[in-house]
Image 1 (spheres, helix red, strand yellow):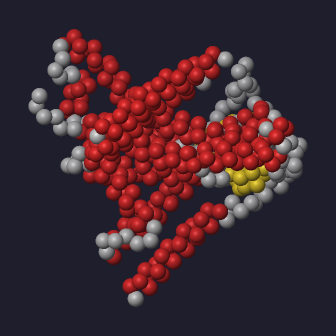
Image 2: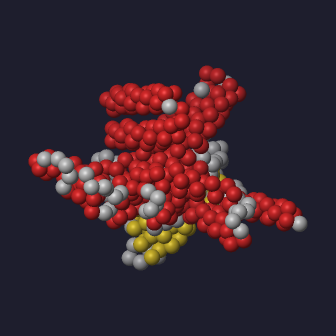
Image 3: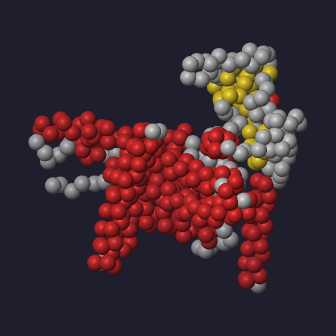
Amino acid sequence: MYNLIGAGLIVIGGGIGLGQIGGKAMEGISRQPEATGKIQTAMIIIAALLEGLAFGALILGK
Amino acid sequence: MRLNSNGDMNRQAISNIFLSILLVLVPTALVAWDDQPSGEGNLIDTPEEINEYIKHHLQDSHDFTLFTDGETGTHYGFPLPVILWDDGLKIFSSSKFHHGETVAEVDGSYYKLYHSKIYKTNQAGDLEMDEVGHPHNPRPLDFSITKSVLGMLIAGLLLIWGFGSLAKSYKKGPLPSGFGRVLEPLVLYVRDDIAIPNIGEKKHRKFMGFLLTAFFYIWVLNLMGMTPLGFNVTGQIAVTVCLAAFTFFITQFSGNKHYWGHIFWMPGIPVPMKILLIPVEILGMFTKPFALLIRLFANMTAGHFVVMSLIALMITMKAQFGVVASTGIAFFLAFFISLIEILVAFLQAYIFTMLSALFIGMAVADHEEH
């Protein structure tokens, strides 16, 4: 029961983080379309780091 | 003339591909290898049984079961070799276990399969359970060719075959032929978009071997997990631990004095902070590969879990919606999640390689004088 609540909290946190990353990347791309490639690469790396964090918490909480 | 020979070569390549697919599939061609039907003929019907089935799929197993006929309880597939070290090498076929239902007798010792693990037992096959339900029996060292090991061997052979032919085709000319035309841009992609930006023009060459191997190995294994053969190799934590260990050791052994300097005596900050940062930095050495292994493992496990749960919808919704509608819904959802999983298969291989390159790049980077 409690681990399900925890999983929900993790997903909320991860969602906020992903939203921030994705939103800022969109903003950056629309400001400087010629830097799309670099922004995308950086975005994927940060998203992957966040994903590792969230998945780590999910696995530990299981 | 030129065109003709090219056409022949393409045909040759295509027939090669078919041949290798056949080589993989023919042994699996539905050999009912269980002489004695086992179960009482239960169909999977309840959520508990579905859960059990999915858990069983996510685990490694000592035999290769493609599917089980629920009415007769016959398993379709083939057994795999079991290799044990228990006072000497013991090799036998996993068909002796009969899916854990009987005790295998080898040279006077008795072994029993319980939850995909092999325990040494007495002749009756009794397991001494503790309060939590884990057996106390001794476990022999298990070097078996399990389903995951078989998957890794197949992936390795596919890579050797694909890249061997790519390497050979460069002897004839600068343009690769056949399937190599698909592989060459991917190799260049790993070099130009992953290795060079992160490690640098001068030093990337030394690490290309590892990065390319990691990338293609993980990708092929992830894609094999999407086939109905049901491999879940990159979803085994042992596999991802080993992959991340490679990154860890390569990073540590190629670290230069700047890298170690940043860990043990961070430049440019006051002395008390330097001391405070030492444990943090040492912890950081281990958390980086730890995040790598957890990410790959959790992603692939979660992917398989979601796909199988969506397929299982056709069983759980059968009562409400009828057979056709529930199958349709399950197929629709599973199909689109599978498409996403194919993207994830590539993305995870890319991220693993990318972050490995990033960590290695941090370890080998030259720092200009501040």
